[in-house]
Length: 168
Image (cartoon, rainbow, N blue to C red):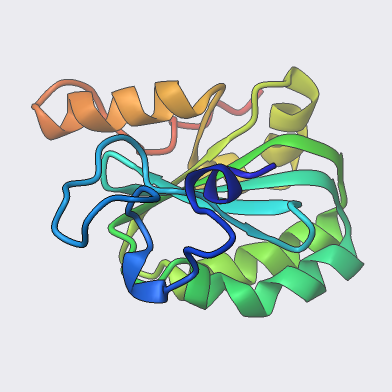
C-alpha cells in the first residue's frame, strides 16, 4: 500500500483535495510529507520533502522499463524546485535504460538542482564508470542528500555539486 493509498480513502478522490487528510476541511493545513504518487505498479514513486521532489525507482531499470516511464517524467516533475533520483532499490541497472531515463530527466530538470541516491557500492561504481558522477552528486541516502542541500543553503559545504574527479 502506497502513502497516497493510506492517506486518501477510496471515496476521497477529488483532485482538488490532493495533499489533504481524509475528513479534513479544504482549509485545514497539511503536515508531514506530501503523499507519494505511485506509478507503473509501484515501481516509480514521487513525493516531496523540504521542497525537493524525490523520484524513487524500484526493481530493474532496463531499456523496456525506462522507455515506459520516460514519457511520465515531465509530468511527475512539473513544478519541482530540486530533484533527487533515488535508485537505491534498483536491482538491475542497465546502461541503455539509464541513458533513456537520464535523457528524460535532463530535459525535465534543465536548470534545476539534481542529485542521485545509490547506497550500494556496486551501484555507485557503475554510475562512476558511466561518467554520471562527473555531472551529478551521488549520495548514499535521501537524508544525506537533503542534509547536504540544507547545509549548502546556509553557507556550509558544496551541496549537490559533483565531487572533483581524480584520475588514476
